[in-house]
View (cartoon, rainbow, N blue to C red):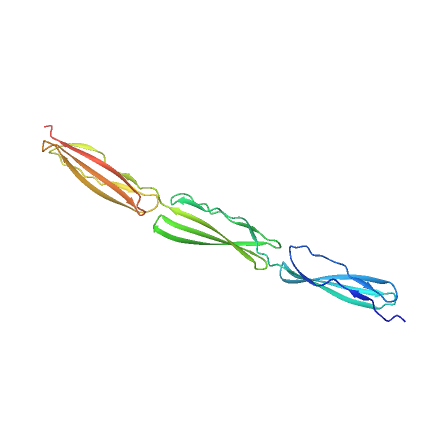
Length: 236
């Protein structure tokens, strides 16, 4: 009689990263009396995500008399590797009135697609035109592994206001003097204008000069100044 099934040795179970090589070793079998035939079937059992699944390798060893031994190798495939960023926008400094490019980040994963999300936070500075924009990129694969990268944009106001003052003029001493106001605009915020007037006398009481100095200052302390000169004379 031959009632003894072959002695079957199957490859050991193992766990492997989804992007790594996956050895598929063969099973071996011996029989006490005759030849052995080996057969194999494979079943893939899906997991919770694309990079997580199980491979079941079922082996059967049969001898000439129909005695059969069975064995299963279990290969557990996992995805524990976070995506990698392939490009992240560089940090930069920009004037508050200039264009601010907001480029996207790109990422790749070893086993699945990647979704990149962005969270933007603005941190105020010491004035309206000075602040920081922090852009946090999060790359997440199908299995929930994630990586983050940060871009910092420093916004600053270094531009002085543009000041427009009244034109210089000369007036006769008996004429009514006109004291027009100055105006100013700024690239990023509001402007305050201060005025200082100085009268410069001469030996003739009816002949003198008025210097009107305007100083325009924005929220960040940048300033520009200009002086209007009014010459008063007695030629009559």
